[in-house]
Length: 384
Image 1 (cartoon, helix red, strand yellow):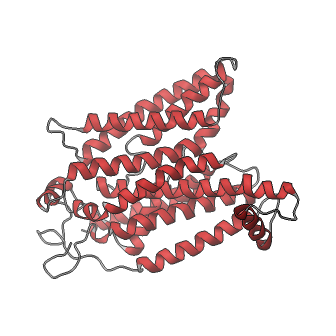
Image 2 (cartoon, rainbow, N blue to C red):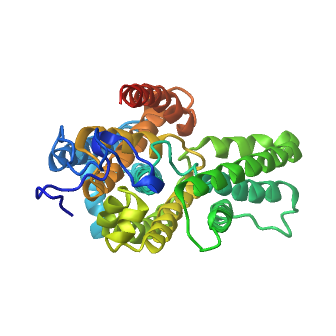
């Protein structure tokens, strides 16, 4: 999409968000700003840096821990595992790498990628820099559903209820999906139109209700509440290939859908009335992107629990570095989310004592960084 001077239309000049109901993003004058702010870093360069860093962190993650591995051992085990050949190495080391450490690494990677993708879609779609999977109540819905299943496993006799590790994931996914449908139903007006403000308000209201329900569940759990609380804090302990495939199977189609809609998302950030004038079916695009982003976010929460700030801080940082074009923002946020969450999980597993929940670490690290960015944005708005 180009402006009158042949330059790309900015989806978000300078990283600020405009009012979608009043024509979108305003420039210093009375018109809409059509000139894209200069990029600080090329998206290709940043993508290569993130990819190289991701490979390096993955190698560190596989090699470090209570049972260290050399790079040569990792290579030999992975080659033998892929080709099906035997390897002259103790079976315990092979199992530790292939069945314990590698599925945990891959699950952390794909969960971080899912949260980064969902956060960038929410922020662009709702024109709100504070949007993330919590904004629409998706994470709260997933936590509520998983907690219900966990509580049932504590009180229902084992002869009646044969508990499986997949049940909390299934409960989280079903509950978050129902929450999303309810948010959309509450936010729709009489003409079946959706506004970002209504979606956010509906999500906040439902999140408050679900949080109260979650507190009630923890009260009923009594002495067994620790198992629910630990899950809610977010962790990648005891991850399996099944968990990875669950998130991966939902992430791939969602990523392709979001990437295919990136140009429409750029246009929609100019304002929904302007987007409709330019031929974008805003309702269809909004519902499609909401469903795709919520699907991957709920899948991530289902297997790992509540992990905050990844979908909030990563799109912010990428937008500051490369600009607001969603054609590059979406894949770069995906890489950034994977890198951040894998780094955090490697740190808590291999280097910190006691393996604190990874959700606690991401909140401790990303929270102050977000406060700095938020303060900068407030100063920019005041000066404007």
